[in-house]
Length: 102
Image (cartoon, rainbow, N blue to C red):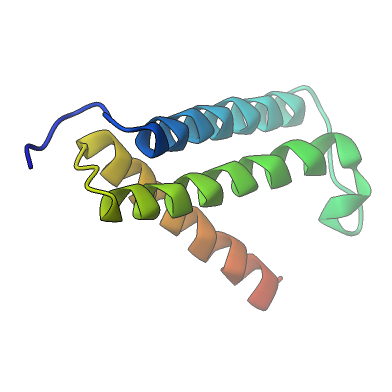
């Protein structure tokens, strides 16, 4: 199978779409922080910050899972491979935040 830059099948396109949602939600989070929003004692106390960043993490992890599934369904696009790698890194970061919270 030929390696391409853009995805060809439906799962690869879903992976790219979820990654775009991750980027937009992460940008929203950064914008809210730049505008002065701060967390409380726990991160989930400020819903205005926690909902976008938790949703962004869910989108990145979902994009990675769908990217792995599409890889087994013969999707060989460079973009999906990069998105899968970034999603796995986000997954490791989230696991690290839960295991070592401080």
